[in-house]
Length: 472
Image (tube, rainbow, N blue to C red; front, side, top):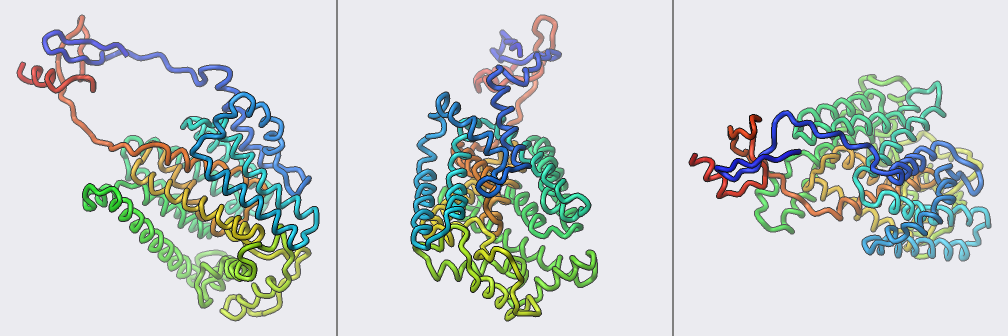
């Protein structure tokens, strides 16, 4: 944009009426192909091949692309910041091999367990090269994940509630939060909060409890309420971070408890359909509340870890006694009316968690790897509350959702690519230094430059020039 200088004051200013040429979407063909490759990697996970378990098409593309990427831009994947992740992921791989050998795991299951770790590392390397710490490419891949969730929901045609839970809700939330980011950039926080509350009500209506909690927590974390915490904490950075972490834990607990209470009350009043009402009432009627009622695998996985905390049980281990234990826990604590376990063709030890799965199968080395990832993502979420970048609504939702997945969702198939992206996103956020956003009101002027009115000084105006302008 042209800059005019008022000779009397020395103030450099922008001219009214000038419209810069719009920038092209892609600066080069290489930029276009990088964005296209990213989008294909994300969307390709909607379909898979049954080779070593479910192998998504995105990872089939990855196998073809990765050698070229490593030859051309391999240095990006081996940034020093990622070193600890590679070491711990390698430890998880080693722990899995030791556990498989010690427990005599069959060859096919060993291949599936090994592929789970190897493809997580390869996915991370490919995304690190393609994204290259650029916000634009993070945005492109996030949109590809939204498309993936939309396509994935089609496999549940005819069952809208299942489609909503396993795809539509995530896709709709990500698109809505991209729109929310537009208003967030302009500091219209009340609009952002309204969008989130609308999404939360929608998930409440369809009985998607975890999404409701995730949406509200992710929105509260990036609101400027933490600025008050900074003021009260004084200038000590350590105290600021501690206070922010305590507020995070308090908000998370209150929101989770409140959502549980609201859903339990609604189920008692018959707000949902008959099947959903019965499910929520049975899950919340037990001794440990809805958290264990909805995820009884958690206590079973903890017991399996206690039985073999160092070596683990190996890849996809059969454990009939743990299936019985799961049913016993549900029966003894009021979550089920029978102590007979359900029949299943493959009685694998139930985990339903990234963290517990890695520890049960790969031993302590797998557990350490995912504990590190959990802490990494949690640090990134806390940093978001201080940075508040333009895409904070989207970033916060993705990372809080990933924290939930680490604790309460199974790991495998398309989740490998998503997990690699969220880990990379956490590194991206932690790489950037916090920037204090200070709103400065600059005085207007009425200087004329070749017949064109000049509206306001730019930031390059010095205090001396401003003083001269004010004095006339």
